[in-house]
Length: 349
Image (cartoon, rainbow, N blue to C red; front, side, top):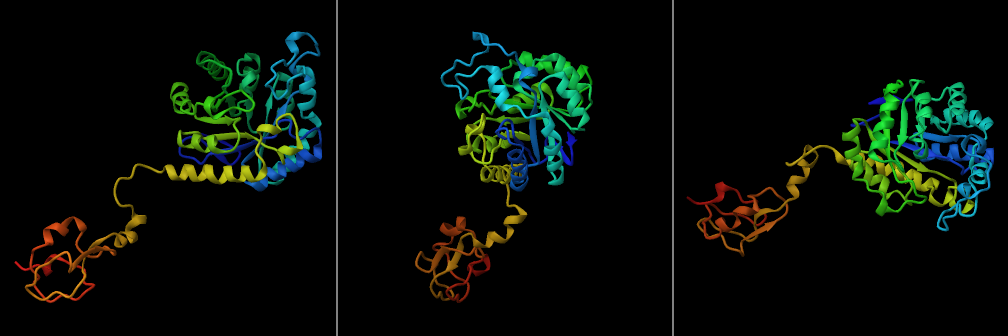
């Protein structure tokens, strides 16, 4: 367990909800600031940016290696340089976005995509770093981030267990002592069928660190389910309205959905509770509303109890229903009025 800002991450603590802005600012600082404000209103705990430029993440090349040819991709027909020019967050925007987040009580941090981005973010005093799935085997970057001594959140998409283990060792060797791994499916959007949430507790046990979910599915169902499997952090892409368009808008939450995620993930966490097999203290007042045996018709002393003069009804202040069959055929020790809860002292002999 460790802290990012005022929040504690790890088992036994409420899930940490991160709204990922990514490229949903659509190259407008005003829109970016509005996204920060909407995330705060929705109750998110953190806002996350991505820190790169097209030149720090790829080459301005036109050959087939740099083309996005998958017809099912949201970004089909573009080359990588074009995509990242459209999606990147100008570095001069980081400070005003972070300052607005701080004013609103949001933790603000970012994903650096190369070593120069780490130097830049250190200058802004970020409280933590996020390693994106596509950078989780970038060992020079991992070492640079770990050397800051700050908490690291690393997505595990497009990586084998061996890759993840090796990267965790690189981080630890370089000084990282506070690490969260995120179960991630790096397809955009991801389907529920390829999300495989049962990986979460296995990954936590295998790596000995807290685990969360970086969720690219539509809606909040997968994220809420992840809480039941031990996820301590949920990251979701966030926009003002999907209809506004943008590189990540198709699989991003809108403000009302983010607010629902905050509420329902906390409810899911609280509902886990502990193992409870008996009547809880909270239920004690409700016990009286269970059924029990009552006198349904007037009964004289010495009269036999029958299905006509005894009923199993609510409330539960008479003998439990399990004794009903044993009572039939027995005699009453006294006169009993209708509505009397039956007790053992009412039996003759």
